[in-house]
Length: 326
Length: 159
Image: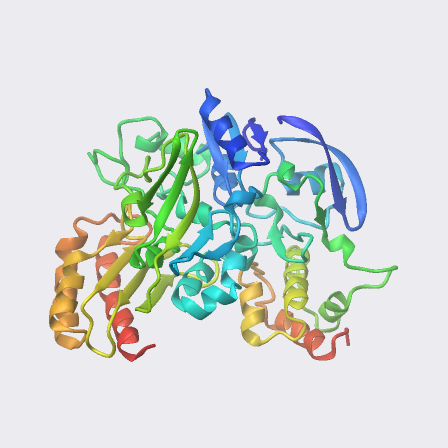
């Protein structure tokens, strides 16, 4: 099936791209590798007037170490290149594991970091062919005040299935958003919203140019559970970061993904582990907070009860790995 | 650009093709250049039968990338693997090890296998699994396919 008709624009510089966004009258979609956007366009979930290709923008490339030791990743870095980056492999093996967990090598050879960070939310009622959706009727995301996943839901509850944000949120990474009005930085954890339609804080005239990771020597673990490894979206994924060693840690970050509309930073569970340690007592206390902290879950892609159990299992596995590790 | 001429270097030949923004790379390879070896499968990025190589010899899915993105770039399709009428070692190995059944996915599997060999001439089990994870063959079950790749990896040429 042909893609919807649109104007394909490939700017040579970031400034040129930002000017296109500033002057745009219609719907402009940003294109990284295209592996999500092209598919959504084919399903007519996205019918942009303009497609703005960012993949080759020179300002969005490369991995660099800043003077303060922070690591800067360009938004147009392909996931393949990040997986192969000696710097990342040496410093953040768990981050590399998360990049490598995204889809298959075929997809990662096209897909960009910025694209995965901005990956559209997914719902099994919406991410279908147009004919399928027409038979079911539209929903919040496709123009009606109805949610097929949760009756009466006020906002779209589609899931955020991106893997790479989880360890980056755990590392307190900051995204840089540029527009013709200027540039702003935002903690990645504040970038995502509990709204499946406007699921990020990116304004329509902004381009995500890169991400900065502050220096740290903390332990970091990433785990992903999925149907077929090496190609599918997650059923659930987790990133856990902790300082200290063995069973002791005072600063923890626990981020769960693919279970909710935005990646979820778990404050209560982290507090339990920080107080009681990473031993079995702390772990059980942390698991006990999950039900309240996750709140209501949808049956999208897997039953809510499965998601709850999966959250506990992921947390247990991740903490076990932290105890042993690095 | 909604429509325009772009140059695509496919299997070493330069082609000037009229491409619209509605076309994916796969649409152009099959529809305009009549290179029918590359197949259209799921068009969702799940099956891998549309796999071609970019200029670095990496496997990419031609169904998930707009054709206009490829202006001026080099692409290798399954038709470009044979040299002077002789099959590439990986193709010969697929024949020798009977890594084919119905054959529909075979171009995608061979291009994925060749991409593994381009990156790692003597691939490990993990390299092969990682490189093949993006393609699905519903007949052979990948056992014969992996045997064929391993053999080419061991000998550097076909058996």
